[in-house]
Amino acid sequence: MADLQGKAAARFVSLASIIGLWTVAAALTADPNVLPTPWSLLGPLAQEIGSGELFRHLSWTLIRVAWAFVLAMSIGVALGYLMGTSRKLDLWLDPWLVVFLNLPALVLIVLCYLWIGLNETAAIVAVTLNKIPNVVIVIREGARALDPELSAMARVYRMSRLSQLRHVVLPQLAPYIAAAARGGVAVIWKIVLVVEFLGRSNGIGFKIHLYFQLFDVGMVLIYALSFVTVMLLVEAAVLQPWEARVRRWRTA
Amino acid sequence: MIRIHVRRKALGGTEILRDVHLELAPGERVAVLGPSGVGKSTLLRIVAGVDRVFNGEVERPDNIAIVFQEPTLLRWRSVLANLTLTHPGLSDEAAGAMLGRVGLGGKADLYPGQLSLGQQRRVALARAFVGRPELLILDEPFVSLDPALSEEMIALTESLIAETRPSVLLVTHVLAEAQRLGDRICRLQGSPATLA
Image 1 (cartoon, rainbow over the protein chains, first blue to last red):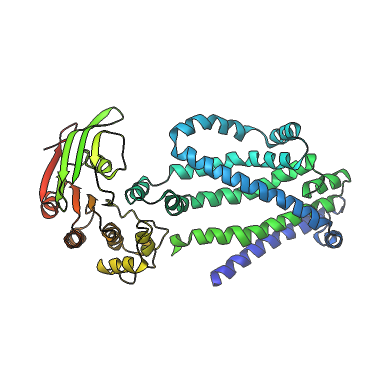
Image 2 (cartoon, each protein chain N blue to C red):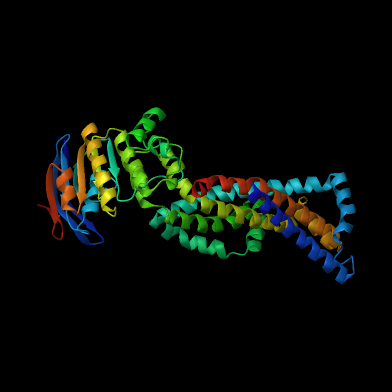
């Protein structure tokens, strides 16, 4: 418990130092149009919250992040597992992987909008396609490291396919899935913002585009940081507890 | 009756096994003795049904158990779950009783990593015998153990075999183990290896 409090304190101090640095930088710039002080944003923030604008755009972005995350993780984990366990499939799909891995996010986004249209499907497909290759790379490494002796054991004892997946394969892949998920959320929301910036009429990216045109640094910061806050909460409330749970056997 | 007939087994162009014939009557204990690297493990993997790429045929019962050189446990599941997950029909009580039989009463809820290596091997033995297998395959299960622990494990294995009476196929490179656990000793030798 003391350890847990120590960790929370360290996180708090670390975050507070970012705000401290920001305050110093704002004082040195001495121009609110370039970099406003943290507290001068509180007023406009309260206004955005009060009008419901912030919440509305935040939820649009969150929905897109959630869709892209679920799609990219499930397709990426399945593909990565298959490529890591089947040499033949790996041989055939690896060039595709390299192509998609090296395709700039912007190119995929623009192509999706051009081919699918300026709609929600295109936005989510673009983000998903951007993320899948990274997930595949990580999970493939995990699948290659699966213990062959355990698979042999599971076969001799005739464990069902489902039971093998759940109790033999997935626990071995869990650290890789966690790594892909944590890296994934961060990358996905950055790409979602670009997607919104380029072709959506709602979401954090759309608002940032709007305030970029108005050259309103304060509002850009408010929208960007409110989403960062949400992601920090998701990380602390969902991803870290889940990771701790699947790692329990290591520390017991 | 367990009938093993491997006409030919090659790995990457190298022929490893040729004309290996072996029959085990119910309850019979056969030890296959051979130096390291001769292809003993390859033979076992074929018999166990893990390796299906070979010329020949194997007639084996459905209910097989195996003990490897390493404990080969699911380290992320409890000791009890290591028994129940590999034997779907097994009740927690029966699994717990088996753990008690191998001297691990009270350890059921621990993870394998919390046990000593000797205890982990006991879990592997419990897992092998709890399903009352018709065929038990032992792949050098006592190698890399110090003499005292090795003796302890062999004694436990002997008494469990006496209780459950499976057919046993043991491979080892230690003559003393083969003599002690086998009714019959075959030697796997040569290149490609064959039984003598």
